[in-house]
Image 1 (cartoon, rainbow, N blue to C red):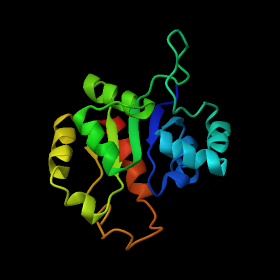
Image 2 (image 1 turned 135 degrees about the horizontal axis):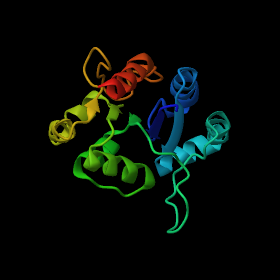
Image 3 (image 1 turned 45 degrees about the horizontal axis):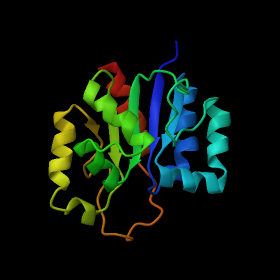
Image 4 (image 1 turned 60 degrees about the vertical axis):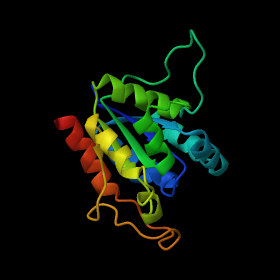
Length: 183
């Protein structure tokens, strides 16, 4: 049975590249990918037609709205969650357990259960990292066993708007997902 990645995308640069840079490479490795978006990321990808393209490629609906009681789960059980890209807001909410949308609900539950690995790539800049609570958010997530992709070797921080259009470290993200499932 193919492993399943529960991919959560938030509204940050790079979310528009999820299909070619993360979904397709993982599918080529035999994975199924179930995508859930934050509401703003869903608005962005709906406007470009990317939601439909992701659904066609994965054969699964892209989620951003909660299901009603009694409705069946549209995604299969996952072997790993990856939050890519994660805004500073998404990271803070995950650290605090604030599950105020479908995307955050599933990842907060996964962190609380501790039964499947969770990989998070914070797509932030230097100003976000200097926010006084930032380090405590990362510490809380690390303490819960979340695999964080941070550091100059993965994502060197720059001042806001000084590196527009910079590619995400897709290879590092894929490697982190594969390594998280192997451990």
